[in-house]
Image (tube, rainbow, N blue to C red):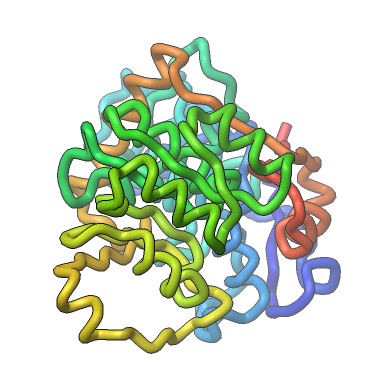
Length: 328
C-alpha cells in the first residue's frame, strides 16, 4: 500500500516521504480500514518534529491518529458483519507505529466507530482528537446545564466543538477570539457572547452574564498564559478544564488564591481519557452526527503526496479549521 512515513525526525519537507509498504493484516480484535482521508493534528506535527525522541526506536512511523474510511477485513473475535461498515478512526498512532496517513490502517475494533451514511468521510476524520477532547473538557466534571461556561480560543479546533457541546448541554457560552473572523466563527458555533482573550471587556461580559459571580466552568487551550484572567473570570467552586499550555509549558500556580476559590483543575489529553469517557463521547458524537446537529470546519485539504504541506499548514497556523489529507 501507499503510505506517508518518516524515518528520522525533523522538518516536514525534509523527513516525510511517500513509499510502498505492506498492507497490514488485522490481528485478533482488530479491523482493517481502507482510508478515504486522514486528519493532521498538532500532536502529529510534534511527533514528527522530535517531541517524542523514542518514537522511532522500532522503525519508521506512519503518522496521524485520526481518519475515516470503510472496513475491508476483520481479525478474529470481530463480527464479519462489520465488513463494509463506514467508520471514523481515532487513536490510530498512539502507542503504535502505524497511523492513518496511508491507504490502509489496522486498529482495535473499538477505535473504528460507525459513521452514518449521511456523513462524509471528511467529517468523520474530524471527530477524533478535536471533538473528543472538547467533549471531555465540557462533561468530565458533571452536567453544565444552566451554567455559564467560558471557552478560550473558541474558533480553534477544540474550541469550535466545545462551544457546541456546551450549548447542546444547556449552558450559556462566552467565547474568546482574537479578531473579527474568529469572532464570527464563535457565534456561528453557537456562542452567546464573544470577547477578546484578555482585558476588561471579557471580565465585564462575564460579570454581566453571571450577576458578578463568575463563570462556573472554563474550557481552556493555553493554561499557563491565560491563568491570570481565568482566575479573574472564574467563580468560587469553578472547574477549569485545560488541554494545552504551549506559551508557558510549566506554569507557576498561585496555590493560595486557587485554594480559597475551591477550584478544580482538570487536565485533558484524549489518549489518557478513561475508556468510559471515550464511550460517552462516542455515544454523543454518534447521536449528533446522525441527527445533523454538529457543525464542522475544514480549512485545507491536501492529497497524500502533499502531506508535508499539510503539516506545514498546522505549523504556520493563522487559520480556523481542520487540515485533512485525502488518501483517495
